[in-house]
Image 1 (spheres, one colour):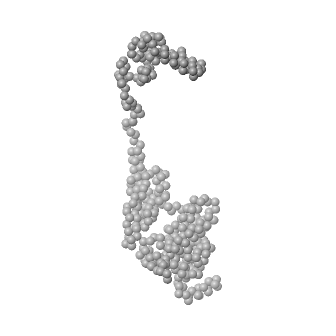
Image 2 (spheres, rainbow, N blue to C red):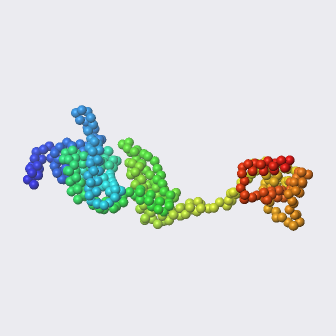
Length: 365
């Protein structure tokens, strides 16, 4: 306590005593190297250069602070939630270090009021405070070390400013929630760009609209696509919850779409395969081409569904051979020429089969 009192007395004689006191209220201790903290609060819109002519601003400290903040918060989350899986820990850390959270912290702690900028940049840069917060963490790391950053986050931020348990179990990604809702309800949803403009300072400005089943939802605008889509998603979710007429209109449009998709086709295509690409020559004595059955190259019918009747007795093998030599007409009973007596279960050698085939060929001549 005595050392702190002495430090305060010394501040009365220092040029930057107001900044020292302000930083003490914010970070909980007095800086060693005040220039680091001045740089952390210097926005790039203030065109300042060092003795070597290089620009001086908080962007480099912001880069360093971002990395240190991830490590410190990751350590805290890991120890605070024992047994939780990697996905939960990553999601919780992301919520704690996201720009929206850091922006609010910077505003509540008075960091935003200490930032030096040209004024015009702060009017549209929604991340000005969050960036300065990260730069301040970078300055603490260079000035006091890693342990000082850990104490700052644990005792000053998480103990007094943020309830880590509420943050961990609170869903803040409205775009993700809207997409999940649409998938569960099998509803078509898209983000429609309404254009990109620039403000008077030349900064890009995006506008997006949520469209559900062709029904126009809410719109959102911001200095990034993600920010505008998040805003549009949040407003659309609120409208779905508070306006029954809107959600009824969405599901009515879905019913009309699914009904159109489920209408059956009246004319079912045929599965018949046409063989009209085959040219069939009409043979004397055969039925017309469009009526004749499939025949073999030897003019023998492969299939004959006509039953044998008593009036047409089965011709013998000799009669069949005689009729074949006398007339070229093809009989419907030519399939009876096959002699089933030749079929035997007795095995034959290759030589016997060849000899039998040659004998049958000579006999037909």
